[in-house]
Image (cartoon, rainbow, N blue to C red; front, side, top):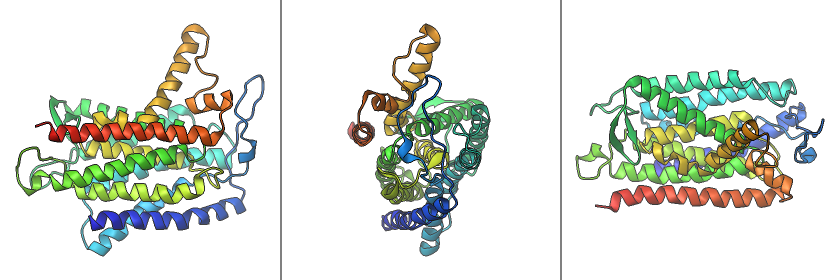
Length: 355
């Protein structure tokens, strides 16, 4: 447990230090994201006051997690685990896809970034390679980081062939990463919601470590591999978000950009898959799912009926158009995420005590 706290503290401190450094460097060079403006009859929420705010702050989150993971293992003189490295791989890999997108937004002033197809191909490559690697590297007990079984709180009898497992992994990763990306539209919204998920996963992984089958095959034990390293990883993600949120909350001094949103989505997906709680992911990432569904509903309604169900999608922009203040939307959406995460943890614990 001490290593988990230490890892989270390292990430938080480094993020608190690195983020203002990035703000100075990016602001000095005028590297800010293009802001969409109303034109040609298309209205957008008024964000003119955000013009000039530097982006690509997700580099601070990524750097803090990598630094904290490395330093914690050096101090404890323990080798990194295959599971921990896989979680880092997914987070960093998707973060690099975000870097490419932010590059076009910042350096080329193209507010839409890279083409949607190109982004999806990059995400698919990282997700599928993560899935394949996760089915390798068995430990002494023959456990792999990923399982062929569909999981709720632990593996179920639903065993999938390798090809279907890879498609399932790709679907979950693509869904949650794009959900976080869509949510990242207001100061602190996505980062604050992600903090709640990471704190919950930290507690969950610590519990799985204490009740792990590696300490003896007892009733209700968990077969999750390397749960302590996953707890450290989740704590690092929470800590790095805490440090970044200090500067990202309204009014934001820096945006995380796709570098941050895609990497955070990758970290949440990695924790869901590696902890065998993938079917609880819609609750752990509840706000991100709601935001994604709002976009799907908007597009579907417009294509089928020619009418929009929202004034503007995603959902938080609809409430901006209605007239809600930004900070009011953010806090209320954080509450929604907190309720969803609480429900996920309740279901997780209920499964343990039901017998």
